[in-house]
Image 1: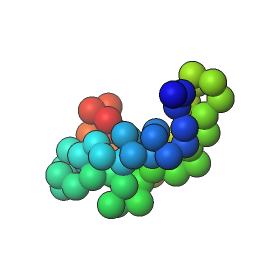
Image 2: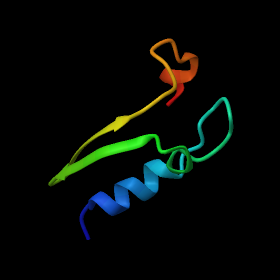
Image 3: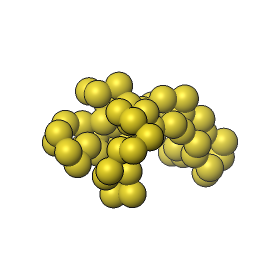
Length: 57
């Protein structure tokens, strides 16, 4: 089975935000997921442009 928006949202949403230790989905951080074949595009909404652990994600 190929990638779906739902499977990507579940996988990325389960990742823990490094500073607060909560899943990204529970923080509402996963947005605008798009899947075209095996290519995925999405936006992660973080608290501010100066968000320190950005590279860790």
